[in-house]
Length: 494
Image 1: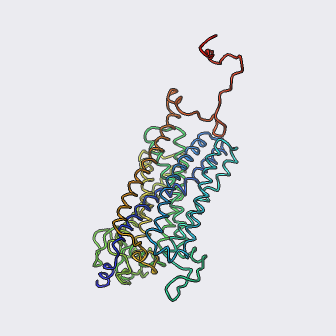
Image 2: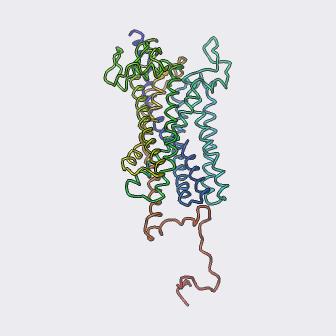
Image 3: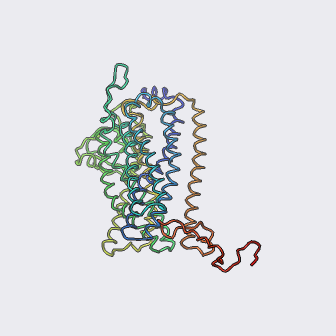
């Protein structure tokens, strides 16, 4: 208790607003990441189907998804840039001391970000200017650039969780940096593949959910059927894969970050035959309130046998581990992830069973209701994944090397609270602009598909084919009467 009191007394007042500011901006930005990473792949998948089968409906979907992709990327520029500045402004202690060790990951992400911007511009331009297959192949690097950006970010985050690739001199400063070891840390592989598949799965369910809502509202045309089937199939295939990857990542945490694992599973004392608690709340005295207790299951999940020893939170000093509240937050986030993943497996099996038996979509409205909810549920799990990773690591910003309180800026707390208020206002405006643009696009597309001739006439002209130039009226020859028979001469003279 004395060490905890000393630690709390040493906590700088600017730590809380700095954490809140970073948490808000990261929680906002991470909701856009699945679309930045995975929407290019899903769009190109639909684009390839359109060209291979000469399918105009698929081509229309690919073209419209590319427009959403561009709008999302523009919003991601704003939120991602803010995060980049915050790393240096809020946590100068970490960047100043450790930037030379793990900063290459951020450099890779920045390079991939600009490459992706160029490739998106080329892809959008190509709809009206390039030959079909040339246009498609120029778009293929887009998902690769997105994966490269994810590579850089996960390399940096995995290093913060399992730092290596350096030695410390007499002053405690890192020297003899091995870049390869700093990038490919023990947690990099489990984190990276779990993250990439999560992004593909989330984007697939979100996009499919849009068309599931349309299906529930009676739009049963091929446009909505295809718009649902392709992304949902991608997500359904990846759901069981993600469940196994998540299990592998959790086991990697058990071996490489035992205190974080103890927080995720609210294990108080090191022991064998440790029970699993579904939800529940850890109290400061080590007791657990609420939740569903399953005997021995935590040891079985960690090491495949009940005799597996699981490290408890009390194996380290109170100042070196998450608090009871932080452990409960990490535990709930982890359990929500696992619960949603389990339910999504059932939804994927439902879809697969109907497709294998009838080569058709399920006919139950409940299936489409669940599919519509699945996208939002996946976004919740993306947030929970970040919470588990970051909160479970507390109080360390670099695991077992630097505390969050040591890395925080010296800026006054009042200034940081004011900055948080400004950022919230800006993000609300940006989110409003994003939704306004998306709704405007939806309205225009719906009018183009279903509107009356008068409504379609007010829209800008569309190309006769997705790859042809816009039709332009041919100039009438001199002395030739207008095609509609009207008098176009000045003053109406004949």
